[in-house]
Image (cartoon, rainbow, N blue to C red):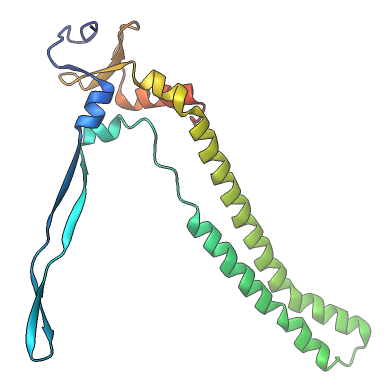
Length: 191
């Protein structure tokens, strides 16, 4: 059994944090609206399946593991920039077909100036790849800390009357945000 809430002293509105979190998720599935679609000389009536998850604000505030930020957009942008940079590389080759009147020095300057956009685009692509690698490393660090974070998270108790979280042995009420910070610190992925 647990200790009563340190703020209000009652035990009737106290629930284990994992129970509050899992109880705050509702899964639903049903039929969508029926739609008439013209097909040839007649109509075809179709409907779609609708499904999803509804999460209460309390369950969301007690979520111990924030979803990892997806890095697919960064990787796609890096690929697009690399292709664009490759297209910019064609500019110096178009300059080399007809050498300028200034000789070799003017030609080297022209190639350098026309290569500059390509270099800038490749540097930007490199920065995006670096950001993607950082995001992947942060996700791995978070996954390594999940067992320790889960252990701390499972020791929490939530008082519905006060809206706070406490540990039975600590004796003080925490806000859900502070509780999540303690969980993240235990997992080693706090910021």
